[in-house]
Length: 515
Image 1 (cartoon, rainbow, N blue to C red):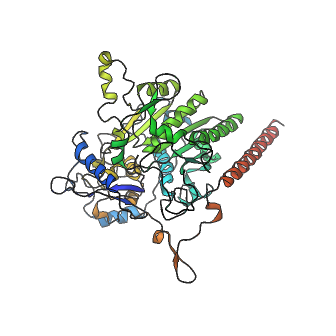
Image 2: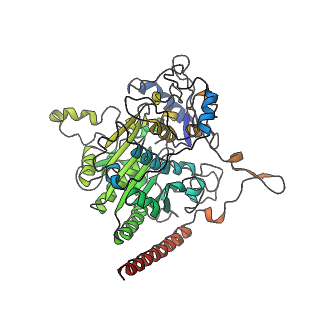
Image 3: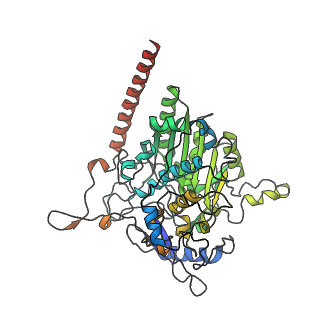
């Protein structure tokens, strides 16, 4: 739903004249103004929901508990320290950290091991934005800018100890506002599909640290927050057997396919389940414990729940967990009950000021359960799923106050707040390690004293390079970074060969041990 951290609605931090008189949408990579529909939608959203949702937005001038009176000393202190803490061996506690007890006694106060894992999965979700090609003048708009073998290396995520094994592409059979990025050019890599995420698996070293072979699915989210209000308030449709229902737009992105497209001859659902099935069967066949962790931000969080539901149905007994950020409601109470019955564990990370997790179902939601004795089960009421880690923008001394839907919903804001969270009653932790600068990658949330430009994350010179003749041109992608269905098939073949070789080596090692 919103807004990827790359595509966003920028609202002025202060509201003048008692209300908002100008709202513009900005593409962080391109500086493209929004259409009038988005302007109207965002204005209506700001005017009608702030009071209704009791967001408790503080005035811009109100900044409580600032830790630094001298921000120059802050620069010296933070710039010369590492951005991560040493990794802990969590093998003995992995089931609790993965939600076996619904994260009881781990959230408030937040266990430091769990904090690191939440940030890890959040960075996997952030990667789907950082590597996405938003340039509408590029013939590859809507694709990933890097091939899967370079993704984590390019984004500095190799340290996490995972390897990407599959890219996921999605389309929709219905009109979905601003989720599908298209090139303005006639000859493009795809007119129907977007890169929607990826599957990755932990390497041997990380597997030993976390106590099991972890398969990760990361889903991307886009769509401006203002449009959730208008377009995702209704239309639940059945999923599976029984009374479970989910929002039809989410389900359409997850299940749509068309044999005449290049990338969605199979649906996102079929693509991800085929890869997960292959990995689960391979590693379980080697006698390893396997977990499936699905993550996503905004719309990606909604797709993560649908993915978890399908995986739990197909793999009874597999440890399936969802770690979502700023995700909307997805289905009704019967859908929630079905996920509970299947053993899916869901941790929802939400920011109190963020509008998106309150939709769909701003008024008619799980709060009506108290009236079940009178009304009975309401199949058309949206309901959240799982445990909640609730964060507050006002807890951080580094964040601006005022009404800023983009900043509140940005995944980087979420990760900053997770990194600084100790408990509901504690101040922002002074030992937080994550780079504060990342918050302003695609919004304007950091206090001016930090002197960090807003929306700074973009390609150098907006992707233009100077050629040997001194002319500024769009560079051609390296052949291995050009999306290609043929390349996908070749990768599948090489991965199968690699897994077969790994299995042979494992069996040889076992035979030698027996001898």
